[in-house]
Image (cartoon, rainbow, N blue to C red):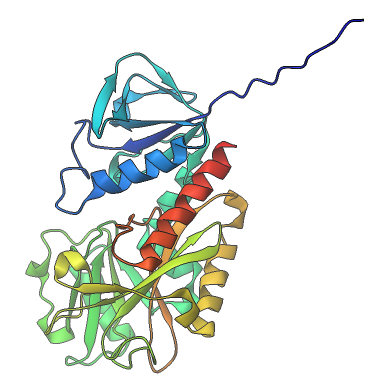
Amino acid sequence: MVVCVSIIIFMSKKLAIYFSDPEPMGDPFNKKYPYFKIFQGIIREVEKHGNEVYIVRGKSSYLGKGLFSHGWRIEGGALSLVQENIKVDLIFHRGNHETIPEIYDCPMVNHPDLERFCDDKVKIAEVFADISPKTKAINSYQEFVETVAQWNFRPEDKIVLKKNFLCGGRGIYIKPVKEIYQSLYETWDDLLMQEFIDSSVGIPGIVEGLHDIRVVTINGEPVYSFIRVPPSGSYLANVSQGGTEKAVPLEKLPADLLELVSVVNKKFAHYKTSVMSSDFFNSKDGFKLIELNAPPAVCDPEQSTETRKYIDKLVDFLVGELA
């Protein structure tokens, strides 16, 4: 009698976490915030499922079709150089949008077109005009003056100016019209101007006064949220501008805010996979969309129960994409 034995071989999948800085311990690992520890934990959990995870860096390291010239593994809490080519099944992009390789020949989180859209504040305001502050793209001080007249703004009315492709609160001014001078910017290209909307009404049960609120989603599902509050005398809530942030349990989020988050995410459902965030603030006329981020920052899971759940969801997502 002949006995046939079937042997199933499970091939490990390979994930590359891409950063723009080519130095092994460069950005973001050289920041004060514990990014290296956070990614070390994420990698450890993803690898528990039989996967291999590599840190890859620098646009020039990508050779095409999921192949990188080199990378690093985390071994014993430190980076170990892998000098030979690395062929991966999935790329988790964590780099600077200004240096992102346009990768269309390998699955990537997020799709480069989605990230490019989320980086363009003008397009966001155009596509979501019904839930955004009134916005106009301008490229000169003269256009600013003309638009102020078209909008019938008075000299004492506040207005918001932003550099379109900058982040972290850089290049943003919120001032009365009469205090906006041509010397405010070295160049007035790629600017947008927005009506100022007062967020001092707060969010009942969550925050009093000026604020913004970020809701992180994975494939459209809210997985994490936090409130940001600007320092005294400022309207900018970015932590890099002195703001403070605090996690908000998802069950405390207002239904009308969650509905808007759903509206935003439905626009990107055709990308199949997404890790992104939507920033809003509340006003007397309801919630307004500020901007989108793809991908949003990771958070230290030791900060709170909410951040722990967020990182766990992110790990589950990556493992699922590699399955």
